[in-house]
Structures are given as structure tokens and as C-alpha cells.
Length: 306
Ligand code: GDP
Ligand code: ZN
Image (cartoon, rainbow, N blue to C red; front, side, top):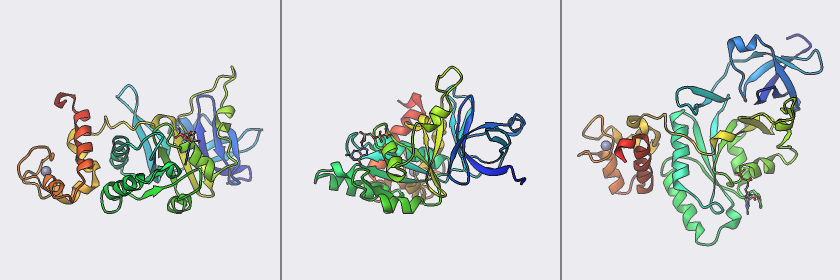
């Protein structure tokens, strides 16, 4: 690298410009050299080499990506890359306000599985819990936790800080992408870990010449050195449309130990005889709640079956 060159990470990509975070953690407005586009379209989370000669750094090279997060474009025909170098999905839900939803969680987890991304579950707003909510948290742990579907579950409160250290220890050194219903506390969680961050900075920097804000699909926010979250506008509701109906079962990891024992090799665990997955549900080894989520997602993937 020449003295003017530095490595950075792209923190947002708008129509008129991008922002990068330099090695000192500073977020800067930047441009992308035209020839970069011949190779790839830069996305949030990309590691890059930029050069600072004029007043604004210019990204000259995008470094090779590890995991990418993609979604099916609204037209339904092409796949869009939303973020690069993502290690894990952080599904942020709340126990109350809004009430916990098995539907949202199972859908988000299925989408993460389909992309082969690890996922952890955050149950926010424990400070709002009543006594009987303890039973709900226990049930959620049983269904989704280590004994059930196998995901780490972290009850936290952004208000009191309860559970936030355990969560941070489990995402340290990673780039996690947040998904969660509106109001679950995604912004609050980011602010809790990084109180100094101005969550509007990226948007302000990306104002167009007419003063209009451009659409920022995904924004990377550092929580501490080497640990970051990516907040995405489009991930409030994970789409599972692109998952083929016959493959949905592979997005429920707790089914996999039984699926091989079904009488029919292509068993979809619906009403086929000799289904080992259904037996496991009947004897309580697989959660009936998860199975009912599987059935409702199956219906979504095939309108004919509705
Ligand atoms: P987002 O839409 O997922 O980004 O949710 P926000 O972070 O904007 O939070 C939605 C509302 O929930 C705000 O009024 C927050 O103050 C509140 N909130 C977030 N976390 C907590 C929490 O742990 N406890 C309580 N009581 N309120 C919270
Ligand atoms: Zn079966």
C-alpha cells in the first residue's frame, strides 16, 4: 500500500455516495472509483482499500468477501446482496410491547438457516416482564434453545442492561446482522452498546445535492473494535418466498436427526405414513409449536395448498 492508501470498511451505500469506517473508527463520506464497478457492486460490510488524495477518500479496491446476506429483489426475479462479511444473524424480538411472536421468530430463523448463517435470539424488554412471563421465557428456551432447535437465547433489557454483557460476549469479534419486528428494540440495543453513535450520521452524509435523503439499505454500526452490527431497513420481515417447498424442512435444524428415519426418502413430514419427524413431535422430542410453524410456512410456500 502507498502512504495515501488505507484499509477501511464500507458502512453504508447510497445512490450518491458511500460512507466508510477507517482504522481509527472514524466514519467518513467517500466515493467509489468507477473501475471498481467493473468488478463488483460495493455493499455495506465490504472491506476495502481507499486512497486519500483530495478531500474525500476514494475506494479503489474491494477485498474478497466471506459470508454475504442476500434477498430476493421485490420483482422476485433477481437476488440482491444486502451486506458482506456477515457472521451471524441477531434476531431481536421482545417479550412485551410488541408481544413475542413465534411466527416472526421461526420465519427469521428459517431464512437464516437457508443462507447457512448462524443465528442467536435476543428477547428484549425483560424489565417489562410480569411474573408469569418467566414461564414464557422458559418455554421459549425449551423450544428454541440448546435443548430444542439449538439456538442461543439471550433475555436482555436495554433499559436496565440485564443480560447485555452475556450477549456481547457471544457476538464479540463478529459482524452480526439484525433482524426484528419494528419496536422490538434494535435501535435501543445499538445505542446501549455504543451510546456515542449518531444513528442519523449515515443518512445525513448521504444527502443528495437536492437535500433529499437517499435510500440506505443497510448500515454498519461498530459496537466496539472488530464487532459490528448491520441494521437493514428491509429485514423487518424476512422473506422465505425463495425457499423451495421441499427444502423448507432443512431450515428446521431439530428435524434433521429424524428425517433420515422416515419411511419415504422424500417425506415432507405432513401426512405421510411412517414419518419419524411426526413421531418425534408426538412423543414431545420435537416441539409442537415449531411443527405448527413449519406447517404454516409450508402453506405460504405453496399457495395451492392453502
Ligand atoms: P426498533 O424499532 O426495533 O429499532 O425499536 P426501538 O429501539 O426504536 O425501540 C422501540 C421502543 O421500545 C422505544 O420506545 C424504546 O425506548 C423501547 N425499548 C427498547 N428497549 C427496551 C427495553 O429493554 N425495555 C423497555 N421498557 N423499553 C425498551
Ligand atoms: Zn417424515
